[in-house]
Image (cartoon, rainbow, N blue to C red; front, side, top):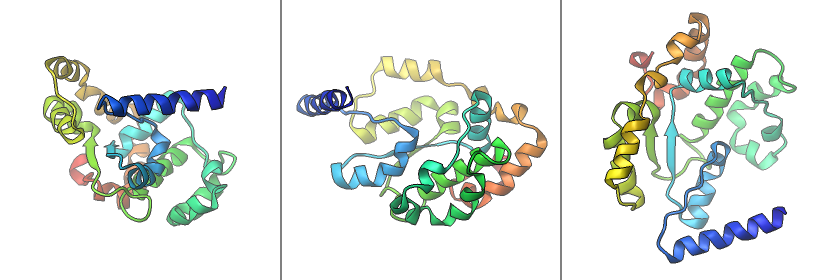
Length: 200
């Protein structure tokens, strides 16, 4: 079944290329493969960046915990994630508060996209908060970057789906103590993504 699914997927990608369609690979953890896919397959990388508190609040609400066993079991990958190893190891077995683990997950993902071998070259960056506040401008620029026509139907869908309140909902879902922890912990990476004091 797995082999058959992979064969179908490859044929779909080949068919898409023949018809000049742009395939989309959307997978949160595939971000760690972004540079490899870019270098090997000349893929355009779009990084969707979210406020650290918004990211953490969303995972907490959905109950999507994260442990780092999978990452720590990959020696080649961990060479590139070495700056966070010492913080990952004590969380094995989901030790400690979930808040701490998913906050660290934000740091690992977005921190590794800033520098080093995992960071893609010249990615197109879409900030969640900006796409909610200005959906037409954000998606028009994105579609232009990937070479896809921006039709009136797509524009209408972008406007309909935009929700500024959702992007700011972390302010009421998280406690003041939780926000203070996330802000202090993510500060080194968050500032470099543009989440300075004004974003809190």
